[in-house]
Length: 407
Image (cartoon, one colour):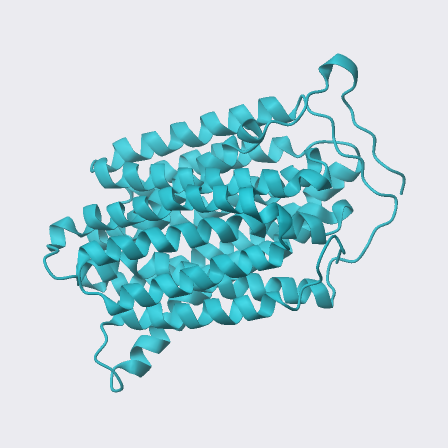
């Protein structure tokens, strides 16, 4: 296979802009900040009452399964388009439009069954776009600049999550929130597509390399463990806040939104720190610092019973997670084979999707098993488990090769 030349030359070619290239990432993360952080739990509570905490595990797992299958299927198609000299931007557009319809259904669903189907549909549609979009940095950015762009994307992810948390916290009318999220998703997609279509493609190497290898397996396991801890925190934070002294049931949504906002704003600072000081460090070390800091923050939440201390723990957690995210995408861009980047990232992204499925199941089993062993409230049991998962993931990072060695 010969190198694929850029299809844009001369005065049309532009230097990639991280803000414009990452705009769609901001829009998708704004949506997930609202849906995964607050709306799914709150909407299940609206439709199922006291059964919501049990139904959450099932609905979250089914949605993650739909996301995983979609990325694997779409990744193959998107890579074929890329190897033929084309761009993956059409996938962004169709995925965003499908997600817009699914979002409206999700917020209008009158019962738990429709809510669950709408959520799975949303996961499928979003991942039609996100599977190919995960390759946007290696598609348009030279390898030596990936850490800088990865840091930008980490900051945009945190900013998007913060905006989503704010929207879900203060827009109490379901349809007003739905319209806001749809507008952000479609507009951000349009900005990224317009910019990407005017950029030159990074040429592909002539040699195709295997995606699955020992190094890839270590990359997958370390990332999966770190995300397992993260999704346990995200999934049980609402239920944790409900049980804090002085928090009324009616105010749990607002107080959870405040903690998520603190987490995500601190994540922007963490990404900036990683971008500034991480240039001289191995990306594995940067990721390890972030994972360890998040584990410490979770144990802080377990130890406290006051909202003010929980807020401090959320700031620490967000800073640590921002540091990890800044290194995460950079590690993937450097290790995965460019000629199969979308499918490789789809497989790699199972290390995010599978933890979405496994986190509520594993935490549920831990909560059940701990009932006769500890007096900890169920969400705190979940947080202890998450801290352990994070620390094992940090240790596993040491198995990855340093530098630019590819899978």
